[in-house]
Image 1 (cartoon, rainbow, N blue to C red):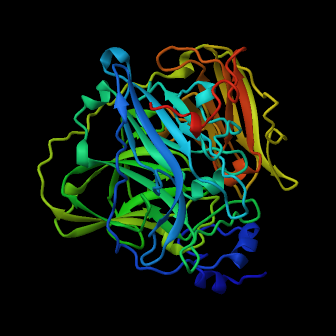
Image 2 (cartoon, rainbow, N blue to C red):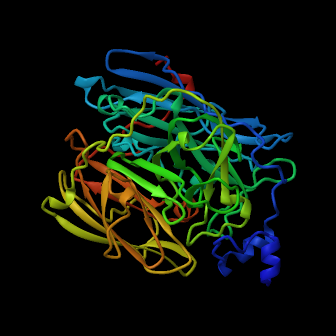
Amino acid sequence: MKITRREAIKLGLAGGGVLLSPLAFPGIARALLSPQIPRFQLPFQVPPVLPPVRSDQTTDYYEMTIKKDLWEILPGLKTEIWGYEGMFPGPIIRQRGGKRSEGGRQSVVRIINKLGEDAQGRPINSVTHLHGMASLPQYDGYAIDYVPPEYFKDYIYPNDRAATLWYHDHVQDLTSHNVYMGMAGMYIVEDKFELDLPLPKGNYDVPLIIQDARFAGDGKLIFDDNSERSLYGDVILVNGVPWPYMQVANRKYRFRILNASVSRNYQLALSQKAEGLTIGEKLIVIASDGGLLSEPVELTTPFQTLGIGVAERYDVIIDFSQYPENSQVFLRNIGFTGSLDNDTRTHTIMRFDVVRSEPDDSIIPDQLRPVESLANQPITRTRTFRFERSIGQWLINGRTWDPQRVDANPQLGDVEIWNLVNPGSGWVHPVHIHLVHSQILDRNGLQPRPYERGWKDVFMVGEFQTVRVISKFRTPEGNDIKGKFMMHCHNLVHEDHAMMTQFEVGQGGPDPVTTAPAQPISQMLPL
């Protein structure tokens, strides 16, 4: 199918900084626009916080059932979702973490699978990965550590790093579909150090879970991975609401931004216009994947924006006192090189309405949390991993995923540099390394962006880029964890088509599949 530029413009495929890729044209032929709804007509919502079912001196116990439900995502239409607690997205877990001597607590999260079968009559397995947590291998959400329907599993989490994390499905070959159907939610860990800082708290500490989706005329979610390349929707959802408006006071807010899309990366900026950027709007970045930065990073339009790849998290402060009451401010996505934004509506995400005055005693400190540089430590070894597409396959170092193969074996306490290489064009790869939080040394020899200079677990590897990442294979509390862990592209379509490998820390660690297998619900006792 040949598409002229004029036809592309009609479809919203050109203009606004969008990159056209001929590799995506087959998907365009199949993709119809979702039902058209007005933007900024639905109120912003925050997923509910999940309370523990009980607590003891050291541990909080949670329970979530994964099940199907019907949700009104688009007005007047019902959409089948698969969600934790039957929600889209799942409930938020807010947990006190950090040192046990300072009030840090452990979590036990029971996941119960009540999903049953899919439309083809196949059982819908689940695997829950708490993304960003230094979990033992048997609780990390290993891709074939299945929880079948009518089974459950208790996951144990140490909460040893204060950060914005998220939980999501991680089933081999089906992660993209299951996350797209709704199997994801935010998990927030706070410690005494962070709580003592004068940052916005309570109702002014707000999660923003950004996703994109495509809907049929009857409201059904359309899953189209564009011939195993990528999935792009034409409706932007924030906390499950399409293009919401949020009423705010003229004061500072902290927003915990999570990119929970399947394939789409975003380039975020504030603007006083729904279309186009205005000059001088500020996002102040205070945290990345692994928690607080050493100091705030101010990004000012139009020349500074916040790139956020799939699965990355950034916490930002927006100070609405810069805007008079009854004004409007938009969170915009100006497009991302290597992505196909196939509808210009995806270039605006939500609207903030400044509607009231409120006192504000919050402060953005000049110094946040010290970030110890790993670059000054002795390097044990350097490894290289190439992420590329060849002969119709997504490969790491020329190989596809094999759970029987280990491609790296760092020892306990080792400090290693991993070169993450994208040798081609047309694709970007947000690479996620399980277990460890790491630091970016450089990207093609250049310093990382200021907001990337903290602890991270996802690394955007752009076209023709090499990103050097340094990791220490020891937990924040100095504990050693042995065992097998995954590394993969977090464009979930790429991951599902075998762009995944594994490393093993030390020797003799617990097997991720057989050590704590799922149990039948019929044998389940109260937590």
